[in-house]
Image (cartoon, rainbow, N blue to C red; front, top):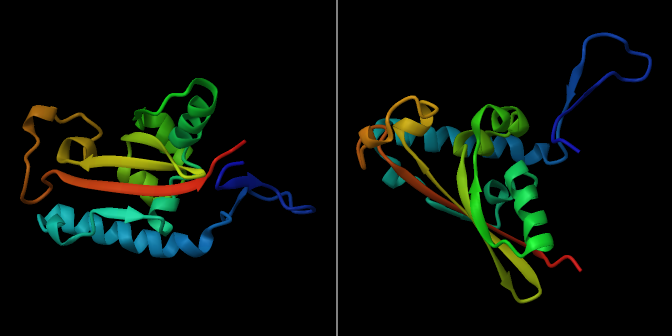
Length: 162
């Protein structure tokens, strides 16, 4: 089920109304975190931002991301432990209004077996080129300063599915 469901309440045949996702309590804090990351990246102060999010609301935003859902199934069905999840126009719609997924866009993932569970590690580099939906040539990205490269890591764990 999607994070946002569109539908009509019983007896209400008006316009479609978005229903808040189950983790709506985290949405506002995640939006604030993403706003801060965006501001620090845009101004060149991304070194002040947190770069690793582990088992917190920000990292947990990926649990139901379409790329991770597919990665999880590929792991259980084929043993695939790493890959890339591309965002694009399809990802834009699949992410809905999730601020973390919208900020990260495309990412690389790795799945590791840890004790009785799986650990998902998602890495991303925000750059001017990625923010411009790759219309900007990648070779023109820069490593620091306003809108320079900003690396982030998101880690979450879950029990192993038997």
